[in-house]
Amino acid sequence: MKELFNDEERRLGQKISELSYCNPFLPERINFEREILGKDFLKTEATWNIRANNKDERPNIPIIIKRAEELIEKLRNRLLQGANASEKDLTIYEDMALFILYHRFNVKFQEIITVTKDQERAIEAGTFYKEFLIKAKYFLHIRGVKFPSQHDIPHLFSIFFQIKRAFHHIFSFIVGGSMASAKLRAAVWQSIFTHNLKRYERQLYKIMGDITTLITGPSGTGKELVARAVGMSRYIPFDEKPGCFKEDFTRTFYPLNISALTPTLVESELFGHKKGAFTGALQDRTGWLEACSPLGTVFLDEIGEINPLIQVKLLRVIQDRNFQRIGDTKNRLFQGKIIAATNRNLSEEMERGTFRRDFYYRLCSDTIITPSLSEQLRESPEELHNLVLFIARGRVGEEAEKLSQEVVNWIGGNLGREYSWPGNIRELEQCIRNIMIRNEYHPPEVQDKGARQVLGGEIMSGSLTAEEVLERYCTLVYSQTGSYQATAKKIGLDRRTVKAKIDNDLLEKLKGC
Image (cartoon, rainbow, N blue to C red; front, side, top):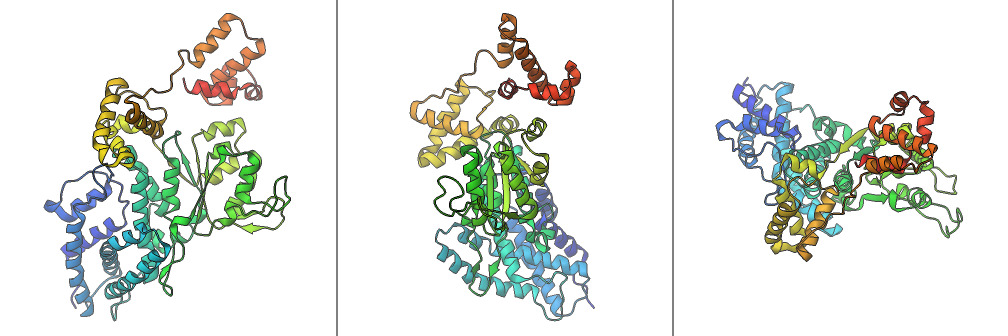
């Protein structure tokens, strides 16, 4: 009986299988493409980046698709003729079939992502699902062949839709062609699918909503955009009977900026309240935790500023999935996903006792770190032009090319390459607006005297009390060590005394020096 693969075909099929399940934002993708195509490989970037002048360009993929389609037709005919196939060979065949299916319907998945009306989205999905079903059965339902995975076709359709949404959102929300940006995109992909896409497809898609994601990084680096990319790319099942997905992904993200609200309002927005629970509670209110569906995401921005009492309540939500409205005793169930973000150093906040350790360890199951703008430009100085052009296109359309060149020239002549961009992307956006309007940009003036110089001047002038000197000195040393224990040992005081003497306002200023 004839074997399903010859040696060369098996090698090709195995590499296509590996390509199908790799993280597409890591250099491993390029290695697989090179191994598949050999001398026909078209040289491209080592990482898959979005730049201002190109998007979603993978020149090797059409060639690989053609080779995969030619091979799988041969393999399918052999299976129909009773070819001998091991479980491993059948798995390779399945993976190739999925690779071809995804790319055949890639454009149609993109179309239902970008339409604006819910009805149109549902109808379009139902229409081409019938085509998808026919083609999936053609490859995967072969008489006399029992495939190892026994793929459920509506589930495959849902996975492919999720993969396409992930690409769409990662490219829409995370810009930049530096290695730092590429690593961020790869990290977001893993937050959505884990490092093992095959395992995710089999089982993990059911539980990823239970895992909390924590996003950290400097202010102005796009933490909310990263949160949206993760939250809006969650798995959504496809319902065959009505021919539509069970939820509209555009309505599954519930953001709450904690720093913009008082603790009472934060609690009310999150948990909801019962009529009469407090002054001004004139009617029952549904909070985000209750409004969020099992397929949705609640995003808590500036989590480092949340009240310790609310931390306890959120800890219970993450642990037990239960919560109560303010003023109510009825337990309610939260089934969605939580994403939190902060620009604070939570290790220091825990040392100070302002952030609960048990709460932190419930938040950090999955962490993403957003890079600063200076980090991106340090690695790839040319990225300044790409980022400026990308931002300008969203502001002035056809004038973007001219404006971006003016901005880059002005920055080079006035701020220089070494400018640190303390406000990150947010500051760059303001710089572009300022130059567009006034042909100049003036960053916030840095104080002539830093916190250390001010502290030294106060001591030399003799204007401080002994208690103030002690507080300032404890804070200065702590800013250097980052540890109460190390500070206490260095200056010969008890750890608890050091902790009590820290001046948080001064500490923030010292960090900036």
